[in-house]
Length: 228
Image (cartoon, rainbow, N blue to C red):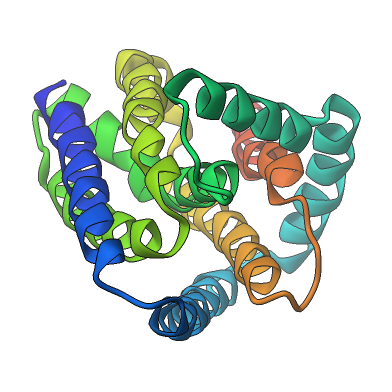
């Protein structure tokens, strides 16, 4: 669990440092940084998505997951949560909710947020979470300078998300075969790609509505294992 705490501390440190950095940057520089940061996220999403070895599984997961998430209005729930938290901390940042949702999605979508807690729980190996902590520190630093104090809230919520996986590691481990992990990561990368397109104002995608898509590969390979 200490590695999850380290991850949260890294996010909070990056967020706090970003607020100091933000005060020294003009909006022109912030917008320039935003474009390049989002282009980098676009590249990361493309690289991860094309690693899929089962395109049809990715397609079905994305479509069915999107239908389920839209029906459940997950994105709207995230936005309401962001606005409620904004009111609780009395923040004046106009991009508070967007910063929270954007950074939380980036830091929770992907295999590292799943495998990291599982490895830490079952093997005592925190190397994945330590690496993730460094990456999350950088992403919070960059996006905190762009979106403001909302990114700080990602820390506690990432901690809760990964702690649930940590505590359920014994149940999840048999499902995390190399094939399943690769496809979950590919679907997660597809969502990161969608997130980057959204941030670049190319399309408007309610990315949180597609979070159930990441369950698709896990369910598929679990059912497949029952017939082996």
